[in-house]
Structures are given as structure tokens and as C-alpha cells.
Length: 119
Image 1 (cartoon, helix red, strand yellow):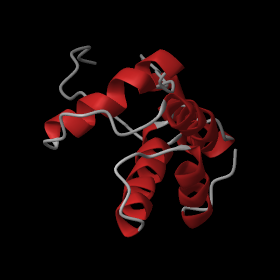
Image 2 (cartoon, helix red, strand yellow):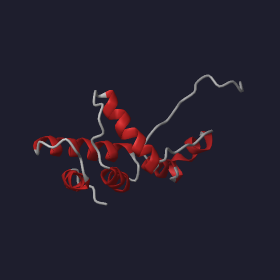
Image 3 (cartoon, helix red, strand yellow):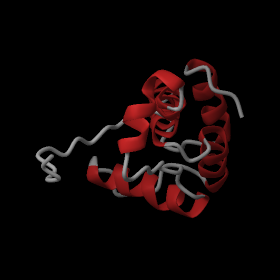
Image 4 (cartoon, helix red, strand yellow):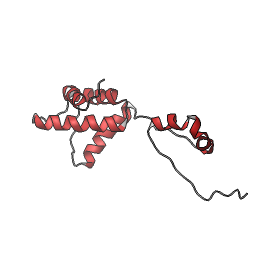
């Protein structure tokens, strides 16, 4: 038998994917997986850099989120980008609806309720 690898397949999925391939019917696939890596959430310091950076890319040059709001945003999302972005986006919408230019922890709490995520 030829031992050359003629194809490389990259599998990507949520953490539940790992649970699925651990099951007996998928043992042959699991044995062929060479590298397994799971992404971690951002740290609080990374969130404090990420949110202003994303706002800057969007054209906002002034700080909008208070320190408390960023900390609550981090704790309510565990640093995971999908919920982090969802809560931040919803808090910006809530702030716009209230005609405020500062996103505080109260608006983060409102946004959590809207996206069904609790701290």
C-alpha cells in the first residue's frame, strides 16, 4: 500500500463536535486526527483592547464603553467572541435607542436580556 497522504482534510466545529467524534461509530476517524485544537475565549485585557479596536475599525474614535461595561461584557460572555459581539452589538443598539453616547453596565445588562445570556 502507498503511504503517501493524497489529501489533507481540516475539520472545524463547535466543542460538541469533539463529543460526537469520541463516540464508537467514529473511532476510525478519531484515530486519523493528527492535531486537535480548541480556541479559548479572550482574556479581560484582550476584551479591553478588542472592543475599542473594533469600534475604531467601524469609524468610532472616542471611547464608548465604560470600564465597568467592558468588565461585565467579559464576564457575561466568558471572552467568547460570538456572545461577546452579540452583547456588544445589542448594547450599542440600546444606547442608540436611548440617545446616549456612553455604554455603561446598565446597557450591558439590557443587552444580555435581549440576547438571552446571563452573567
